[in-house]
Image (cartoon, rainbow over all chains, first blue to last red; front, side, top):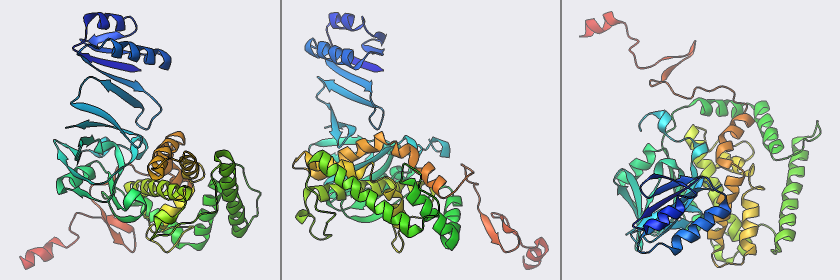
Length: 90
Length: 309
């Protein structure tokens, strides 16, 4: 399972992403793709982000069962504390 | 989220988080770790143990939130290497404690538990009729074989288990990694045992220490978790060997499904079969004839009370 949350991104990027995933709310995409495709999608999104921001959540075999990556929103930073994913704010 | 059923089970939770040099406060209805560089919100209701290292300050409100989620709090030395104190939410049940105490106090049943603990650690069955001393010997050889296999696999020099309580820095990296990894395993075992109401003091193999039973339970998992984690951390030759060991240790816990298994394993070694998951709201009073009678009511004769009144 993978979920993307996009904010303030070009419309064409949302169009691109909806070829692989469901846009269940404006800017919220969900679906199931392989790890390879997921990483390709991440590369595509981050290279066409413009001034927007993206959060990607995906299932893993980590302790909580998921992991996340984010780019473009400086107010919330994802950090890895010895293998635990936490959100750092200012 | 106040009913017992809403409290996350040990099997579903994050094993531990270690923090140091920070302030921990209530934040909205959760808890936040404040450091100079920023603040993190800790998912305290799905955490088993919060390990507080040097320089950590925690508020009363934060402790209350942690207790509400049944999270155990442990005050530890730098890198979790020394254990100072533990704070935990009272368990909802005493059945496991009574069961454990009965086995512990009966020499024959105590021996049977010790045997089951050693047997648990062998993947293949042992022949019948071995004495406890023989089993202990075989287990010792098995642990040494594990060290020797990992030494070959990782290329880490191994001169035996060696650490000094007062001078951690003098130990070699693999021994420091092993101490850090074991500290995590002990924390997790202790939190799990506390959460379901076992005594950490009534150990079967280990005795005479307040955490004897924690050492017993941790030993069940060391060869699959902390020992390989420590060798792998030392092999990477990084600067923060303790931190890396904790991270690898967490990966081993996930691989081994430690959080999902630990209570079931201990229950089965102690031969505990059925257990009421929800405790009665009112306790019982001990009775020498019937075992126990219901608490929360007056057993005085109503007529006596009228005369007094």
